[in-house]
Length: 485
Image (cartoon, rainbow, N blue to C red; front, side):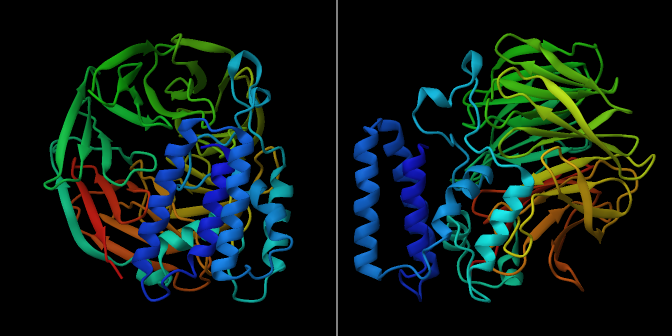
C-alpha cells in the first residue's frame, strides 16, 4: 500500500476510538473495511498530489466531526518511522512511495527506514514519555490495533470459546508448521513430515482442505507464505525447496539445496520476496533467488550446527539464525545484493537446539524495544531485547514451558498492544498452548488451551486474532475460536 494511503488509514484508526463508544464491534468492522478500500485505491494508481489532497481533506473532516486529537504535537513526527520499521498485520504490503528512487540496484527494493535499533527504541520511548500516565501510545500501529482489538482487557482478549475445527488429514505424522496467510482471516496452510502441505479454507462452513501439495519425497520441514500470498516456498528433508502456486496448488519450481543436504527451515526476505533464505543440515545458511533457482553470490554463511530457525527483522536488514548447538547468529543483509555479513553470536545454552526465532520491532507500550522470542529446548520460552543495529541480544525474561526435545515454536500476538501488557503464544511438550503476558512481573500466564494429545509444535494467529491454529506431533491441527466480547 502506498505510504499516503497508510497515513490515511492511520488517521482513520486514531479517530476510530471516538466512533460508537458502546459498540466496539462496529469500530472493528469499520477499520477493516477502510483498510480494504484503501488497498483497492492504492492499486488504482492515483496521482501523488491527489492522494495528498485526500489525506488533508480526510484529516480536516474527521477533526471537524470529532474534534482535534489530544496532544498531537510530537507524536506525528515519529509515527512514520515507527510504522515503517514495525510491520503490523493491518498492512504488511509495500512500505514504499511510488518512487523509482525507492528501488535499489538490480530492481531490489530498499527499506525507507534508516534508523538503528537504538534510535528506534529512543523514538518509541520519546513518544511514550510525552503522554500522560495510562494513555494510549500515539502511533498509527497502536491505534489501528486498538480499533481491531476492541476495548477489552488483556485476559479477556485471549479467552477462547473452544475449538472451531479440527484438521486430521496428516494424522500419524507430525505437523511441524502451521501458518495463516498474511493479512487473512480464513486461509490456513500446514506442512507435514508425510511429505505434503495442506491449503485450507475456514469460511464458508464447513472448513475444507482446498489443495494438498505433493511432490516432496520426504518430510516437509518448513514453509512460508509470500507477502501477497500468491506463492509458498517449502523446504524438505529430501534436500530440495519447492515453489508452489497457492491458487491451484501446482509446483512452479523445484530447487536443490546447494550442499545436497536436508533443508530444515526457510523464510522470505520481507521486502524482496524474490529472495528466500534456507538453512540446512550441513550447518549452512543460503540466500536463494527463487526466480533463477540459484544461490546468491555472497549470500552463504556457516553456523556451528544444523540450522533450525530463521527470522528477519521487519525492514529486512537483519537476519537471525539458530542452530542445534544452542547458538544464535545475527547477519547484516545487503538489500541490494543479498549478501550476508556475519555480525554477532550468542550462545543461548550449549547443546540446547534453538527451534524457533520470532522478531518484533515494537511489542507494547511497556516493551518498547525491538525484541526476539526464542525457543531453545530449555523448558523455557526466552524473550530477548535487541540492543543495537548488529542484532546483539540481551535477555529480558523467560517463561516456564515444557520443551526438552521437540521443535516447539512460538509467536508474538499479531495485533500490537495499546494498553499495558502484550502477549506471546507458544506450543509446549505438555500438549497445551500457553499464553504469557511479557510485562506482568508475577503470574505471567494469561491462558492455557488444552485439547491436543501430543506435544504442540507450532501456533499461528489469523490477522485479527479471532482464530488461533495449533499443530502437534501426532499430525492434528486444531483451530481455536476466540470469545467475542
